[in-house]
Image (cartoon, rainbow, N blue to C red; front, side, top):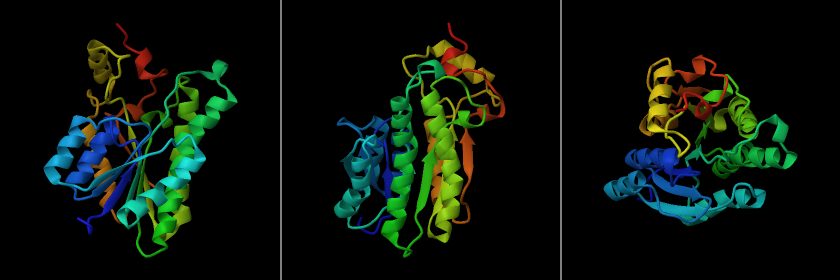
Length: 255
């Protein structure tokens, strides 16, 4: 549907990004799905596209490359004939490492992917509308921004920077765009977690449970249509941001 609102979701093929894109398809959006490398969509997203018939196109770009980042929004506009009305900055670069092993190169790469690229994509989307419409931008953060941990230092610093950029861009754009954020907690396990560890970690959350990808997608969808909300961060984390844990979750409650 050419009159459907258009959402650009970075890192939208897999995991939480796929859940967000699937929810937006059900909200009536056409989808511009950014990916770093080729591959099939997660089944949840593929099912949502098949169910809704949402128009969906994929765009490959390495957000660690400023030139590729700069080309992404123009490529989406050329393909769809219109600028995105919603930008979800979901793609993230996650890497291990504490301060002893931190290098300038690793920090610069994390900042480029997790902070600089989202800021420049937001700028490009707002500029493309030239004041004719007010797009929404939703940045995906991490609950640890409130109680930092020493693990994955470059990643943590870059997510904290994007958190502050959310409010600053909301002020800078003023009435030209709304900028908000969602900060998930531990949601989908990687191979580093056992089932028993995940169960024990869920029990340590203030709510006694971990969030689901669908709940994170719910928050994004709400912010996309909350016309009086800007500069806000919604934590979808089982309450994890309310209590310091000291270390990253993968190091806690291990078997």
